[in-house]
Amino acid sequence: MNISSEQMPHLLATMDKPGRCVFVPEAYPHAQQLASAFEEMAAPYAEGQPDRSEAVRSHFQRLQNSLFRLESPLGGTVDCSLLYNSSNSTSSRLAIRFVGFSDEKPATEASAITDYVLGDHVGIPAKHKAQPNSWGPLELAGTTHDLLAADEETSMPVLTIFRPICPSRQNLQDIQQGNFGAYAGLVEAAVNAAESRLHGQAGTTKFNEMNGIGLSLGATEILYALLEILRRQKAAFRIGSVTLQELIVGPSNPLELVRFSQTAGKSPNNSTEGYIRIPEPPIRMLLDRAGNEWQMNLRMLAAVSRRQLLQGLAHPERTRDTVAELADRVPITIALAENSWASKDTRKHLAEVAGLAYITVSGVKEPLTHIMNEHHALCGIIADAGVRHTAAAGTR
Image (cartoon, rainbow, N blue to C red; front, side, top):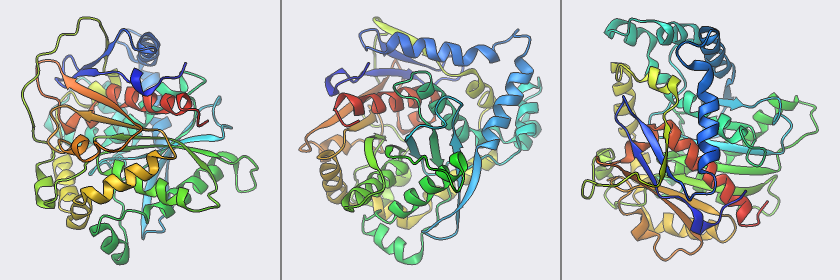
């Protein structure tokens, strides 16, 4: 079943670690289906399952096996992940994801993180050795794939492009002016690499539909990249949907973006009556159970120190025009946290753009901010809604 713009859910979510979950309105057409899918995805990792240890080992090995390195047309190399299963490996549709500011590939091996997750001791030395939070971005890619794969209508391989992405000096000059169009070449190179990995160099199966998903900075990058591809008269594929989560439009002063995780607006007081509760996936909770390792804080500091990228985000008029041009051709879903400082001006700048579908995400009792991008169940549900919006708009 597909959904229209008017059916986009108003989601509630909590970020507290013991009870992190999403609340989906019972009236949302796919609420029960989502709950069942997450329950099935979590079942192999439940305490007491006889094959739980092997399931965890297989899970992380599968994620590690999805990684590959790509020569980037922007400069240097880029780490990517391609996830698929036996049912969608021959699909002509592909979801391509750009991630947030500091989301890189895992810093440790699958064996190390498996031992950490299955172990009883999660003290500081063990945490810093395993670096569990570095596995978060790849774990989210897996959650997104597996949720989409739970329904034939949305099942497709999922390609994720990680940080760091290192544009050339010329490309950085364009980015500083708010033009991220050079990322189109990276998208095309990554798609070609994904086709080769799935079908071999001589394979005849080609992807003919892209579904773009971007988080935070990645939302801006995928937005400009896909529009640049569409502007070419002989694009190799069509764009089925674009989902922009926590898209940053403004402020005009790029230095203010270092406050991206801060809170805007009043604290919420929302009732969960009439909502279905969907807990965060158990593997994610095990990765996050002891907090951040110090290496993660260093990665975040390095990410927000990229001055040219921050300057590129500080061109709200250019981003508005880019969204408007793309929305004339492709269904766009924009998901925003109600108390996010980073995206607090996004709706205002896009108010005159027609055809956008919005998903508002609110906290229950505590504010939900830009950090909602760390909530895996929430991100998966938003990606699922964005892909379904595609077909509802008659673009498949």
